[in-house]
Image (tube, rainbow, N blue to C red; front, side, top):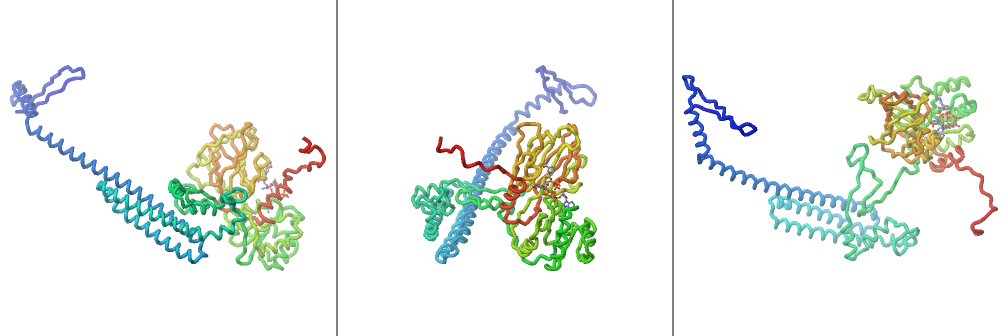
Length: 578
Ligand SMILES: NC(=O)c1ccc[n+]([C@@H]2O[C@H](COP(=O)([O-])OP(=O)(O)OC[C@H]3O[C@@H](n4cnc5c(N)ncnc54)[C@H](O)[C@@H]3O)[C@@H](O)[C@H]2O)c1
Ligand SMILES: Nc1ncnc2c1ncn2[C@@H]1O[C@H](COP(=O)(O)OP(=O)(O)OP(=O)(O)O)[C@@H](O)[C@H]1O
């Protein structure tokens, strides 16, 4: 029988049996053969072998479903066991950290030391046992043996409670150990464990926890949800970038340090080379410079560097100054930080800014001298002897990114500013239109004369004049201060130190903007251009007269006459008269 094909119905259900059949060798259509073909197909469909095959297939697919179900259950068991193992591992690490901390705190006491070592070792053993128990658990869960799982859980619970008892025992040992310490502090702590001023002390919190032997208290400790604090900088999430000021102890968050403390500089070897930078065109500065160079060389036997302009001035004064060193070009300036131990500035704030701008990377300690410095010898003596208090003044790293060269990030030299970067309207009479982003979050659109991104050191300069707050120079942060904003609600902001601020001139801006860096080096920002600003890794260490706080307060009182007001007279109405 020759093969034939039966066409199906159309979309309206009308039968349209277009029949194509094989042609017999003589070329005529054989209607009888069509009939036979249909019959053959029908017969084929009714044949028992096909029905039999279907049954096999159903059986096979059911078997497959059972296998898949078993596999899924095993995978779920495994995942849950793994999660629990991770939880145990984490608890174990937490215990270990606590043990190490405890060990450090009571290292003076030998008896307790031995007990503690024993306890630490047994805790570690317990933890290892727990892990050992976890492995069979994994296996049991995988094969779905419910009974074995329950046994394993019971063993773990037993182990945990044993470990917990060990913990409390040790806490009790530690508690007795700490008794004398607490007694010493008894003047400060009241019966309820409060400090004199009602603030809980760290020790009291810990001792109260360990003191609580009642079941209720113990349960309270057990029930407290545990958590972990970790964070990182600029996309790094490795442990090495974790901040170290927040500690986690039994669910309590405590901070040890919040910003840099007063920093002290102690020379480990004697300073050899000094760079003196001076304000130009000042007679008093020139006189002071001559005296200082002579004293540093003749009395202190130091190498002295000055700017080429100053060397010319010194040589004009006397040919004896030929020992003074200088540089010929910018490439030599870039190596100065490797030669110079100390920078002395003779001038005002502008001269310190000038000094900082010479160092595009690390900056040696700067000793700023004002012009009225009669006692420079005493002062320099104590600086050269050390130790000295210094303020680490943070700088901002600013990059201009051109729209035309979006993908060439490094095309323009970055700027380091000690005070601020200002983006303003320049000579244009139109409002600036600046789109501001902080780490890719939209901040606002500045419409006004411009915007100042300032360091905290620069907070007393241009930013202050524009309405920004005065901030202690050791507070890390970026001040975001608008200049004459055309909006009554635009208040200045202070952003955290770790952010990157992006200021963009939008394409619909009527005019370009201008960026200036510490009041110098103006750069045009055309539509589409942006300025990126973040905290620089190289601060400017400046020597303090007393310490950073005293110097800051003195500078705002003396330099800016902050809150200067005639003292109210004593006579007049009093509270008791009311
Ligand atoms: N309207 C303003 O207040 C205004 C305008 C432009 C520039 N400035 C500031 O001037 C700085 C450049 O200083 P310069 O000496 O090269 O220029 P400059 O010679 O024009 O002096 C500017 C003044 O700002 C003072 N100053 C600079 N930095 C300071 C600081 N951190 N704290 C307190 N006062 C400070 C200086 O002592 C000087 O009196 C810029 O970084 C900017 O902060 C301020
Ligand atoms: N070594 C230098 N070379 C070139 N320019 C300098 C140098 N030192 C300072 N300047 C510039 O001289 C200007 C004035 O400097 P500075 O602020 O120290 O003096 P001042 O205005 O008398 O001080 P202040 O206003 O703080 O009392 C600033 O613009 C600064 O950039």
